[in-house]
Length: 171
Image (cartoon, rainbow, N blue to C red):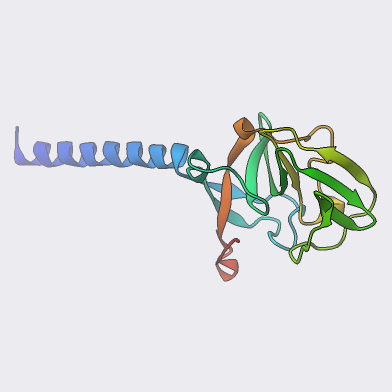
């Protein structure tokens, strides 16, 4: 084989390896996500792009306050905040959210929720999620969303990277 053919073959191998690594990272480690809608305002704004850690929940379970991305339907993902986990009792009443009878201190919400919901006990192995924009969010209060099972969870949102002037870590 000539020097040029050998060099071309090395380039092709390098590109193939890079594509395989990129696919493995996207499939198992991180994925990008486009925020579509205003259900997480003020934490996340419409059209912001973020990175979701798909790996973290292989070693631990979602915790109260985590912002997660999950499958709503085969062609649509949602992003919401975990409010309650399996065995917790959650209730929305009189502009407050109560977790196990204690009102949550929520400095991340846009406004207090209208209307009442619950009390309900979250089934073991499931999660109750709400949008931070409580009055403009399809979340666990809606029967079509309901409690989120681990199989539906894609990962934990942790970094907003676009637009650049909004670059930040989520906590």
